[in-house]
Amino acid sequence: MVKQMNLDVLCFGGGDWWYHSRNHYDVRTMEVFAKYGKVLFINSIVMQKPKISQGRRFINKLIRKARSISRGLEKSGSGFWVYSPFSLPLHHVVWLRPLNNKILQLQVERVNCKLGIRNPILWVVSPPICDIAIRMKKARLVYQRTDLYEEYPNIDVQTIRQFDLKLKANADLTLFVNRKLYEEEGEQCKKAIYVDHGVNYEMFVTAENNREVFADIRSIRRPIVGFFGGIDDHTFDVDFVEKVIDRLPQMSFVFVGPASSDCSGLLAKNNVRMLGQKPYEQIPHYGKCFDVAIMPWKQNRWIQGCNPIKLKEYLALGKPIVSTPFAELQKYYDVVYEAKSPIEFAECIKRALAEDNAEWITARRAKVQASTWDSKAQLVLDKLFVKGQESVGSD
Image 1 (tube, rainbow, N blue to C red):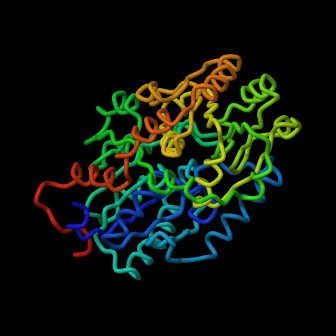
Image 2 (spheres, rainbow, N blue to C red):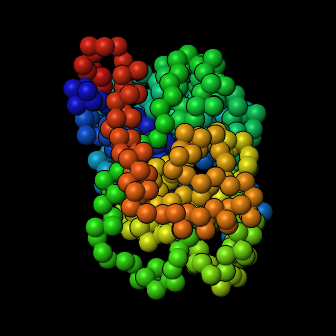
């Protein structure tokens, strides 16, 4: 069991704790590990190439990153330490990479020393940290292959692919959450495992017990078709959703989360409300107000290689779900509606509303009840360490 181990973990995360969504595989796993040892979460290293042409958006990113770095080392509310090192967004510039890596490594080693972390499990999400991760002292190296970062906007594709292959060849364990991707890439890995996402089941299933409803969603006309999460160019199909909304003028569409896409067309519609980003703890209380939950994904390699956590969260809420196709959806066909076109998607929303009942709510929740983050963390550790080994961490 996890509780029998003394864990020291250093995680190079895929997001920034201070301003990105905290509902990611690495964050949730670190919350589990923090119960049993010291955990240091390193906020994401900038992967995208600088794009000054983005204007205000580019400046806002610089400001956010500067603020994150200025916070230094802090203890999070989830039990682990958080740190944002300084680095240059120039991993694609070969001659600058060694200097950049050295700057990063010195900062991280200094913080490790301060926390007394000497021989940790090294958990890598962000590919640009590849060379540092391979070189650093560690008990084990875990590579979390949960997203196709080579499909991420505005990155050097060849560089990220090289990092990915190198990490898979050197990691003691490569973790996949998408079975199709696991089957395609497993042979590239030193050792691989498929362990899909967990869910904060109790947090979502008990949300309805609290009758309080936030003011910005309380007065919205029912039925509510809802989505929570980021609206981003490489994932969320805005044009598709606009066509769906036009076919269902009698329903309200509510979007909870940050938007990096152009949403002017959505905002122009009378039956659309965009409520912006909310603290993670509030998400279940917005989701409980949805009559139907949706996942209108683009059809691209990023989506086919993903496994959205929100699928399990919608199910834990007991909500009927309508989604565009993606590989990991197949094992949920008994509790989810799949639609390929806007016309079909709109019809599925109508069906979902008409067919929803207490029996279906129970069936949806039962589908994910056992998918706790503790159980997922234990599966990884069972695969990573030999049976009988009881202590991993500082020597």
